[in-house]
Amino acid sequence: MRCEEKVPNGKLVCVEVDADSEKTTKVRITGDFFLHPEDALDKVEASLTGIPLSACESELASRIKGSLGGAQLIGATAEDFARIFKKAVTS
Image: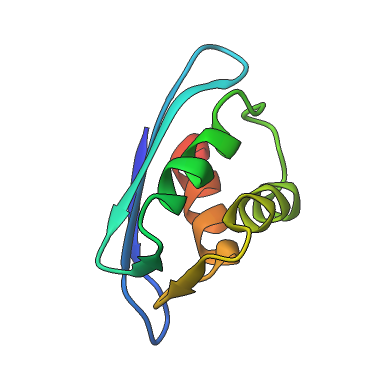
């Protein structure tokens, strides 16, 4: 499952999700946004791995924000990631 979107006033975000019938098994987020430090993206992807496909956007955004810690996300938001993730798994 995959979805990509140019976020308003921002950058391109692409979310790719592998899943079984109920939950994610692998999540990959790419795009031309900035995240510092870069290795924080591994934590974001890990926070979404194993989550039920039925999770709502607010739960996804909360997990993403929690995984960012003190990392700085530029050109996109946790809510953007959550929205695009949800589009990927429902398309």
